[in-house]
Image (cartoon, rainbow, N blue to C red; front, side, top):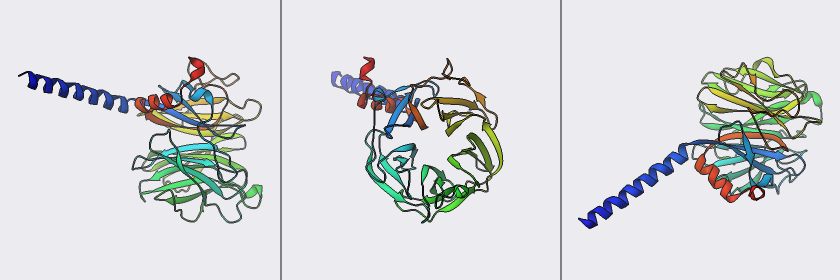
Length: 311
């Protein structure tokens, strides 16, 4: 009887621990990957609600680039269907490549590689991002390139991959006739995609029925001197958009929220210092992206990269 009781007790404790671990893994938190504008490297913020973010590693570097121009700008993280995370970033001011790293835990990044993907006469490959294509079962990478330093040639290009190693030939996703950059594509439904991007120092939106276009109906979303828009979901029917201020107010984020990706309510103030009771970020952030993670993952990241100055 005593042996059976011990077995039951051990099983019960194991069961409760498993439930607790599972609950931790399902509870939502948020990770913001951003660049330091001067050091040009990867840094992290974390948040429990998607509105109020705090430092990781005292705001110090998480990762640096060793390929291309050896810079890490415009970081974007995507998780593939196998659960592996991929970090994508600009690696040079001039050139035809961007960088990719892989990670199982968002802590250890490995397999750094430069992907040569832009057209032969491209002079830049900036702000790469990726999205899964449900129809073709592959990943669509898109970025900004211009050709031979011609300002009228700036366009959003794309290429596809299934393994984050081998890519199709680049094609134009959207032409502009002017300086366009920082595209961010968001899937609203199977027949509705929105592209947010910077053009003429403002954030615009275009709409398409298909991931690969055509994108149409240009509309100004954020009428301010900003760049780097990124949209992420905070709940089943709510999205947040962040952007960073360009020019004299660099190192600050703005934020708005929407329930339909069309109508946006500003949450930050429209004048410096921007932050209020609705939204808070540590200073110094430039061009970031946000993904949902579990509280278990957030705790693991903070354990690896603690904020020692806060102790």
